[in-house]
Length: 201
Image 1 (cartoon, rainbow, N blue to C red):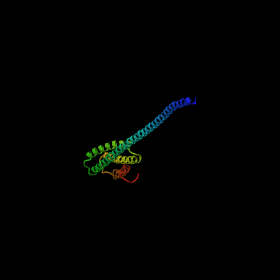
Image 2 (image 1 turned 30 degrees about the horizontal axis):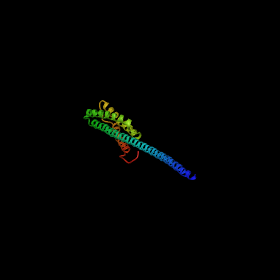
Image 3 (image 1 turned 90 degrees about the vertical axis):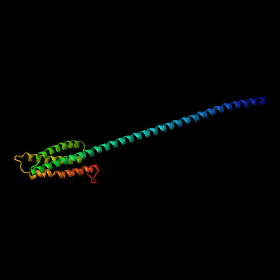
Image 4 (image 1 turned 90 degrees about the horizontal axis):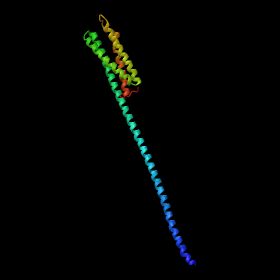
């Protein structure tokens, strides 16, 4: 009887072994698949984080480039303002000196007055722009230069208003000439601000 049970027992154990092997294989396959999915999710998360970091770096770089372009544009505008203001101030001063010489010589006064008025108008327009763009220390010097030039202009206008016209007073001459020093200091201040002169403000 034991001999009849033995083959049956071996057959049952074989069938159970086959079924268990399939079940263990399936469980292992599921586990490997879950590990692959988890690894893939981790890789995707890592890729997304990397992409976000790269986008953030690109955005920061683009912002820095825009800021640098804005700074360069502002610097170019400031430089153009300096050039325009310096030119207008020098022309205003030159027109005053020309009128002073004309008053001394008693010739060409009307032409010099007309040139002075044109130079004054250009200077005023340039100074109005400078007031909006110049940094504090440079604007202080520009204001001083404007006052000096206008003092010279006023002195010349008073000389012109005298009837009969008398020789130019030394006070008028001194007021007109005194603007040269202020204009030279203004020019130095502008050059330092632009970095053309190493001397600090």
